[in-house]
Length: 193
Image (cartoon, rainbow, N blue to C red; front, side, top):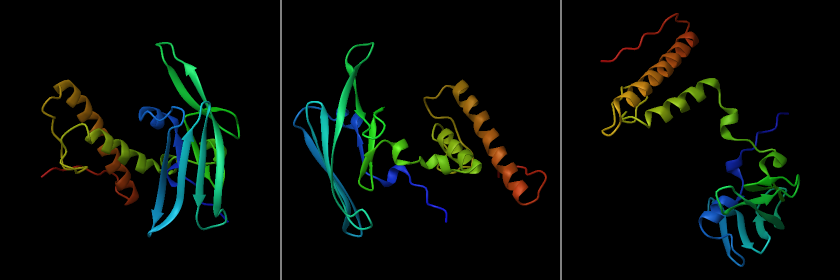
């Protein structure tokens, strides 16, 4: 039996960068979060920042891991060359410096130790082309359509637009060629009306 891949967006995460950006990486600061599905709380998560650690408490509802869990995760700082410091969490499993710790089935660990994947790791070659095309089209005026043409933004340099235009056209032609191969056509031409 094949097991389903688990992705990072399916589990609660403690992100030290997000906490620092909001000013929460100070002693005695705290917060909480929860996830609901059909008005039932699937998980509830709270944290409190101490001097050298972050204490977490969370509750899972339903499934084999139903219950309350508590973890204390070590918080370390590292000096950076341009002054100041950078915060890291120490993974309780592998003791590596991490920016994020995930809470999966009662375990607090980094993405690697929990066996979690990014969504992009399961994309097909075609899906990657579409994602790249969407990213490039977001830099020009395209009216929200992938294949209906695009135009230079008002404050965009022509050289930048021409470079993006070549890249967009190459990806679109590649997508059309893949569609043609799928349907047994040797060459697919792109036409604008």
